[in-house]
Image 1 (cartoon, rainbow, N blue to C red):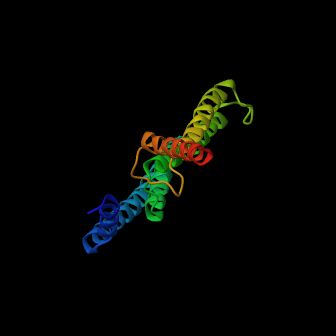
Image 2 (cartoon, helix red, strand yellow; image 1 turned 45 degrees about the horizontal axis):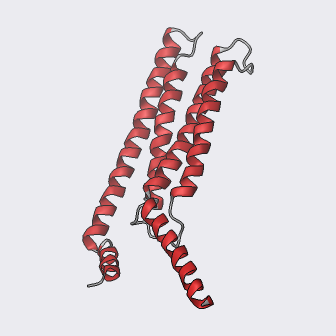
Image 3 (spheres, rainbow, N blue to C red; image 1 turned 135 degrees about the horizontal axis):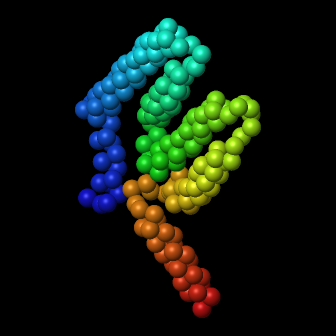
Length: 183
């Protein structure tokens, strides 16, 4: 059996009854835990709000727990959406997670900066250091992603190096064939 037919058979077997049942079970479990986390988030933060209101309403400390936990909850929702959409390539997931983390956590730092400064919209220099550093790293990650991730017509089963070797072999074969034609 050729390598190509082995690969095709492997891909066809991924969507048999057992494989689809496994995927469906994972979706149901992800949805269940997501709903559970949303309900816990609402209940606990409502309880913290009541405690804060009854004890000392001058400083709304419950907002710290509300916001910090919201970052985690929105990340969970983001993961569920990605899983439902079927984005499974690890490089794509990693890039999307880093973009998501950059947006959410820098929003959280902005929230902290806003509520800890006397003049609300005076951005202190500390906010710009993580924003700029992490933004630079995210740009590098994005460039690497588009350079290393396979194009739509390339095989995802091969490593980046194997794909680059194949590209070079094609170039060398074209050069060799053009030399033979010129003789």
